[in-house]
Amino acid sequence: MKVAILSTAPRCYSTRRLRQAAEERGHTVKVLNTLRFGIDLEEGEPSLVFRSKPLSDYDAIIPRIGASVTYFGTAVVRQFEQMDVYTPNTANGIVNSRDKLRSLQILSRHDIGIPHTTFVRDRADVLPAIERIGGAPVIIKILEGTQGVGVILAETTKVAEAIVETLQTARQNVLIQAFVKESKGRDIRAFVVGDTVVAAMRRVAQGDEFRSNVHRGGRAEPVALEPAYEKVAVRAAQIMGLRVAGVDMLEGADGPQLMEVNSSPGLEGIEGATGLDVAGAVIQYVANQVNFPEIDLRQRLTVSAGYGVADVVIPEGSELVGKSIGESGLRDRDVVVLNLHRGTTIVSNPRGSRIIEPNDRLLCYGRLDAMRDLVPEKQRRKRRVKAAKLDPKLIQDLGTN
Image 1 (tube, rainbow, N blue to C red):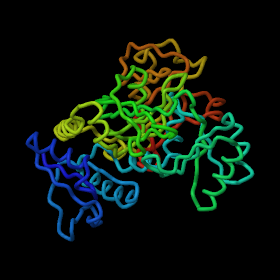
Image 2: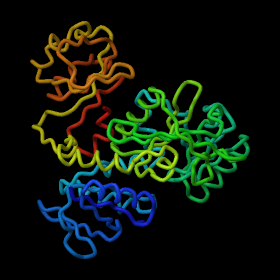
Image 3: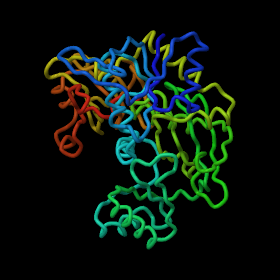
Image 4: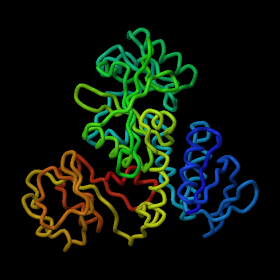
């Protein structure tokens, strides 16, 4: 396999470890400065140049896109996608995860615990927003901060109001988030590769610091994750469109509370804490995908007019309730069930013998008119069937399994 690591910091620990792991496994690897690419666009021939010269062929890329180069970096990743070069993290996934508000908006429709969060713009709305999430203390975050930068604990409502006003005056968009006091300055970082947590650590803040980031002096220790935490970490990464991700969770009273999904997680802290070859796991996964890649429906599937994907909720009283998928007549209507969601359980490619229950969510592919007719008119008005022709701009978070 010939792989390129996209990075502006070739000497940083994570880049060096990925390169070392690839070379140890016999792969050809180069570190390419993300900012030295040129994106050439012609009809039917998307291409890239590097340092003003034609780019040689690569089987895969591993993007390490820093926050300061998100726009250009994701444009480069997107171009590699158009050239059919494999990437574990898509450009859309990186963009979605980089914006804290956007990522929480996407995750909030799924059965994943997140701290109560609010986003307001007008000063008059700040105090009501703080009250809605339970009052002070609250956490205030700028939308694109990294490594704990731009994360502030406000102990009182007056302090919170002053901080938000100051940040908004500086043209910063901010989130106000409930403080999960039981976490006590600790969080969990789970490193997800594919559909597996390959390593996990607990980060503990030192002294009076409430932020547990290693870059802020936090102490890291290995941790064996409970199944609930593993499940949340893997699902969150997949929902965001990331196959390599660092998922940060707080240990809340009601279980895992997801804080952030990082598309370029550092390796130094987690490898140092766990002693595991995390870089090797990333390289092995990428190599396996190059040999047998997953197909991204949003990019690769061409459909006929009138066909698409729909997320259909089966209501109480539906004619489908109590029937098996095989007996439901869906196939006769030219509808195929791809996934069945029941509570927090996801069944991919469900068997025809599986019985449909009220409130099941069926991810279907087929005729849009037929899928629309599965939901009564009254419920369609209350909750629109989330259907879309396979356009990457319209399907932001397809791929919840």
